Amino acid sequence: MKRTIRNVMKNINRRINKASLAVTNRRRKLSSHKKVLLVTGASGLLGSKIVKIAAKHFRVVPLHNTKPLHTHSLKLDITNAKDVSSLFHELKPYAVVHTASETNVDKCETERARAWEINVEGTQNIASTSNEIGAKLVYISTDYVFDGEKGNYTEEDKPSPINYYGITKLEGEKRVMENCKNYLILRTSVLYGWHPWRQNFATWIIDKLKQNREITVVQDHFNTPTLADNLAEMTIEAIQKNLTGLYHASGSERISRYDFALQIAKTFNLDLSLIKPVKMSQLKAWIARRPRDSSLCTEKIQKQLKTKPLNITQGLKRMKVEAEA
Ligand SMILES: NC(=O)c1ccc[n+]([C@@H]2O[C@H](COP(=O)([O-])OP(=O)(O)OC[C@H]3O[C@@H](n4cnc5c(N)ncnc54)[C@H](OP(=O)(O)O)[C@@H]3O)[C@@H](O)[C@H]2O)c1
Image (cartoon, rainbow, N blue to C red; front, side, top):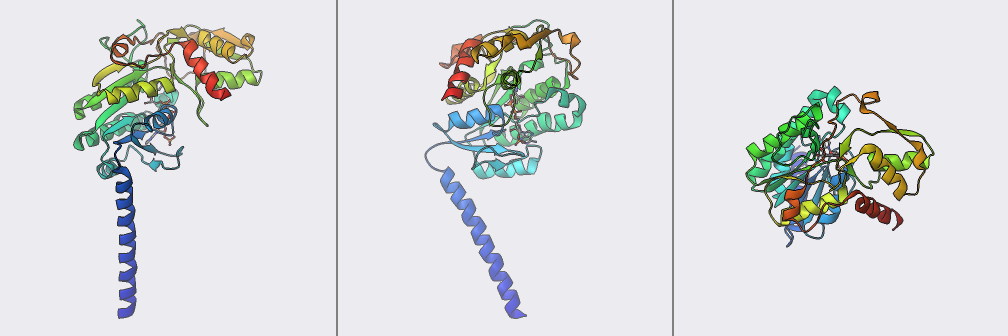
């Protein structure tokens, strides 16, 4: 009996030693000369680009929820306040880029409780924990905080969201401002770019046209589409320059979805005639309302950064070059 107890104790001690060695090794790895940068939503479109670009300057720790994109990615459900707190206290990052979100606008409309939990309470968890450990927090927000009646929105314009996604993202902004001293909020618009498995507007158009499928695209819906790689570069430069407050960080060109689709087709030498214009009011597939013109004015951030917001031609050209590389 005594022997069994001794063996059990030995086993437990061995396990504890092994676990603390793993933590020490993780800390040692992270304590090299580069500052630690945490990226939530690293498995998403923008998060994946930030991980790639930030690696030159920071020791990046990518965080995912359900599907890791990077071999060294750690799982973190941002709605679990305890897990957020223990991971942040363990890794003590210099900065956190919070891109994780429920980004499906129609899903936010139909699954409101879940959207609130992720976009508001999850953001609150990230904001208060970042503040506790003295980390800088960059929160990625959206042009959908506006109602779309004016267009070319500046940071001074009053938000007035018309769908639940916009409501949760705006509330997320408030939680960041109220709970974290050192914050930067970047509002962006229609992200596009390559991702191993996630579709966005540009990759969806390319896929459908390659399959010779006819598609309908709205002609009275305007944004400032943003190449995710370009926003990732702006984000990293903004952290290095320690920008704080609220900025609009999107592409530099206002365009309708229909004209954007035509430009995508032209850039990738695909058949333009397959793209049919349609009015927003005729679209049956959308559940949530969309702002008519939520284009963003990027003058404020342009004055602060060397990295400039790209126009449509520049963004699509970069995407094409990447595809051919
Ligand atoms: N996409 C756009 O056109 C657009 C426009 C304006 C603003 N934004 C904002 O830009 C940011 C990035 O958008 P994106 O399109 O790059 O995102 P995305 O590709 O849709 O990826 C969303 C990410 O959020 C993660 N996530 C979702 N629920 C989570 C949870 N409970 N805990 C932890 N992580 C969770 C997902 O992780 P898993 O996949 O691992 O589950 C995924 O990595 C978002 O904040 C969005 O609101 C996007």
